[in-house]
Length: 253
Picture 1 (cartoon, rainbow, N blue to C red):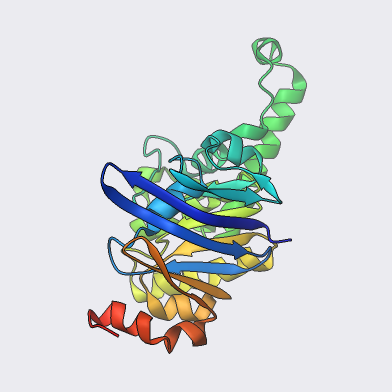
Picture 2: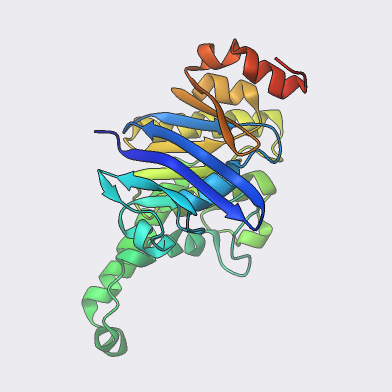
């Protein structure tokens, strides 16, 4: 059974059909890319799957169970995490604290224990800090363990967001343009990081405009155009698909 099944998914904003009748499956353990020209519906598709939007039609299943229309928090508890196109970093916090925020769903919310400062909570805080530090090392941010977020360069902040998402211990990680705005060296670092994440057992779904990165990383690729599924397949299959070539060149097949 696929980890994620998307069936005839659609969403309409008034008369605008942003996503139309899109279907695909994602197996566990793969890197799955969603590409397409600007305005193709890629981020809208992510928003539907991750609970930001409720679909007009269609279904989304994870492990065979319907998750369409569930809240982002409910999906996070099922192991769905994501990053966004624009940075969502708390600049007035430390880098380490930003990563710890990602673990909030796993924290003990017993207010009495918190008020009494039970020793177990103090131990848990130490454990979370150690876990956050290890995640920062995993994404290549060992040099920023003591840094404030507002003192970090843009490329490092992009990886900090990924570390925070990983702190949720996801099974399914959605990355919306993780290499956007990065220089070639930073893009290579993100490329290697995504592969490390996938090798660790997390299924990665990404939107990315860097085609070299997409073709290098992806096990499967979904191509959208005007909200519809244009093509799906391996990197080699998508690269030679005449409809994909036409869409990207602005020509007609």
